[in-house]
Length: 118
Length: 110
Image (cartoon, rainbow over the protein chains, first blue to last red):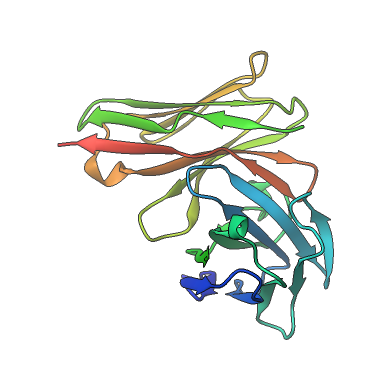
């Protein structure tokens, strides 16, 4: 069964360092997303991406964050200068279409990348 | 703004029914979802309901929607140890944005 894969599964970094989290969405999917979950808190929407551009982003997704689809398969999240509060589990997701699960809008999630900022 | 609230923990005995509750705020949400996360895995879609329905049944799962109170619940009948997981309620805001709750950690006691 096709799946979304994420690397690394866990990354530890020093405050101020740049981090790139990688995702390989399901191959025929067109919409890509990043979510994060700080320990004990809600799964928060960061950004959605379609047709090589950001469709929507949240207030969390400020100038230190960027996303890219550098080739036909990878979807990356870059954090330029990490802060302690960026420590979280970051989930990548993809879908064939937005919104309605019955019409292919189901989100398929990866297992997550745990980021620890020291 | 949009918000989804869930209790954090639920513990039930094997064979009993589990009821996981959720409240949401966006009355324009067209679809409401339940996702399940097993240990070490990503979130997987469990079931969903359209906002014009008040109940949906799918084998052991029953979803109830009270639009007036913006309350969604997931009932799992005959809960099994394999049902132990984190269950996330989500609403869709706009076209692209899923709003999730904290997740409810269900523990099934043998």
